[in-house]
Structure formats: structure tokens, C-alpha cells
Image 1: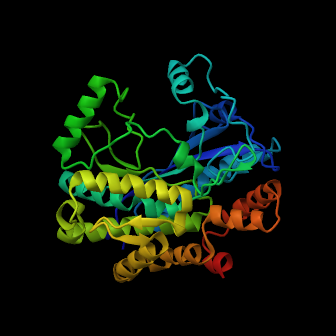
Image 2: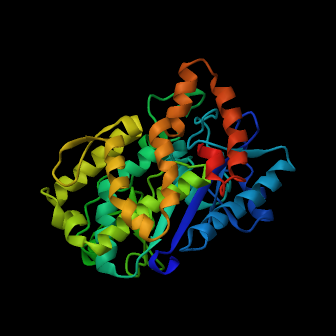
Image 3: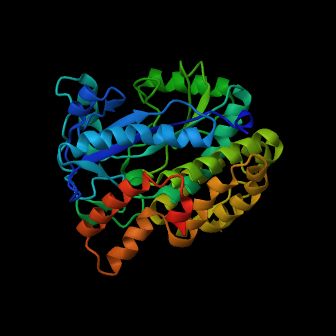
Length: 380
């Protein structure tokens, strides 16, 4: 099975704090004791990266092992991990520097402030063939809104409703503001070099967009695509399900590029595809699964939930062939009961306080880490 699957890895950003949901920054102390973790410019969140794996059973363990180590470290200090992708009960008016003497942190604080203080999941898929890598990049760019909708988990900021399901995506400073649909590797290299020359990007990593190429020496040596749009998905089974859908879409493209590469299969040109994708991302951030989107094939209007259901039907035969269909099952749960943001908003609207919601979700997040191999227990 694993021979047919792509290498996959995660970049995981997490918030730390009290069991009450209050954010407490300890990233410097964590990274001093736990070398698997890295600081972010604001000390209230931190990051770890998993090694690439193709098999989903190994991928799940690679995802959870660092979290369990971190949770043990935090518990000894009466701290815990917090769900959500924004400072739900925090203070976005204050930037809590993790390193007062780091010039890069100066730049981040001065130019972006707490707009970048978020938690998210970046999903990397390994692709060596550059022609297919950019075809996959185009497809995932055009469907990125669907993955944001499945993952949305940031309806709160500073103890109040934001009016969005993914406040993180609406506030995060996409850079540069406009990114084209890349026609080829050469087009990507030329465009990156232009952005570096005109100062709209400060280095080759300063491409903050829904999905981007990645590799050991960007923009020249590339070996994977990185989906960056997802909010923090705390439930590991749901994260593996989102990853499986993403991988199956890319594998379907590799099998049939003439039907799934938007440059070949869409009635829209590259400029129209870029504008459509960006607009879909914003709409998904606002309303997630209930959003009205436009399909990349012809620009027709479609509800986000229906589009995802259509994709699940399309990829199920391949999932069964690759023996990973069970990993898609949690997505039906999300479509039926809503993502994290939608569940929180429903409980809030029926009288549960924001503080109680966060307390309950902190406990649930911990419990789910030990139930990843028992989806029946989680999803009923």
C-alpha cells in the first residue's frame, strides 16, 4: 500500500496556556528542554515538524509523539495545549516577543504585529517531478478553500465573536498580496526573483499563501507542495482524513492530468483562476462549509459542503484500492456535524459561555490524542 502513497509531513503550530483557556507564552523554555520544538516570534505559540511518512499509521504516531512530550512538559507546570487558531481569550493588542534581540522578530512585530500570532497545520506532500508538482500546485490552489472549510477553528478573538469561522485566515497577512497561478517551474522562479528584487518578498520563504512549492533550496530545488491554508485541526483522525483527501486529489491528478490540471481542464484563464481561488478562500474563511463558492472548472456556483461531498465520491474508489478509505470516514462526521468553529458557534448560540467552550475543548483535545486508533469511539 505505502509504495503507492506519497510522502507526507506536518508543520504544527500550537498555543500553550492554562486549563481555563488563557494563553501563557512558554516557547523559549520549551525549546530549551525539548529540541523537537521551535519558537515563533510571539512566545504564546510554538511549532514542530514531523518527519515524512507515507503510511498513515506511522504518520499518525509521528504527529502525536511530539505533542505527548510537550503535554507532559506543560502538565508539570500546570499548563496545557489550547485549541483554536487565534487568541480566543487572549490579548491581540500586545505582542509577546520570544526573543527581544532577534532582528527578524523586530521586522515581524513592526510590519504585522499579532496578525501572525495564530496556530495552524501545514500539510506537505512529496512530489519529485516538477511538471506534476506545479500541476498539483494549481489544483490544490483552486480547491484550497475546501480544506480551510473542513479545518476552520477560529471564530473567536480577544474573548468575542469575530463573525467569521476562520478569523485566522482573514487576519493573516497574505504575502505578496496577489500570487499568480504558476504556469511552470520557470514561471515560478522568474516571479520569485522579481518579488525579491522589488522587495515585496524579503526572502524565498516569504511567500505566505494558501499553498506553495517547498524544497531544500527554493525556488530552484523543489520536492513537495505545502498546503498552508488549514486552521489548527486538533483531532488527529480528522487531520489524517483531511490529508487523505488532499493526497487522493493529487494522486488522481497524477493519473489523469488532462482532467484535473486547471490549466488544461478549466474554461477560465490563469488570471481568472487566481481571482476565483482567492475569493473562494475568503468566503470559506467567513462561512466555511456553508459558504457559496465558484468551481474552478467553469466558474459555476456551488456550496462548499456539496463540493466536498462530490470530491469524496470521486476519490472513494481510489481510496479503497489503496486501502485508506477508512481514513476518509471522519470527513463525513465533519460534514454532518460541522467543523470545530461551527460546533463552537452552535454551543455559544445556545447559551454556553466562551470560557466553558474552551475548557471543554481543552479536555476533548487531550482525550482525542489517545483515541486516534479508535474512530468508532470518536465518531460513533
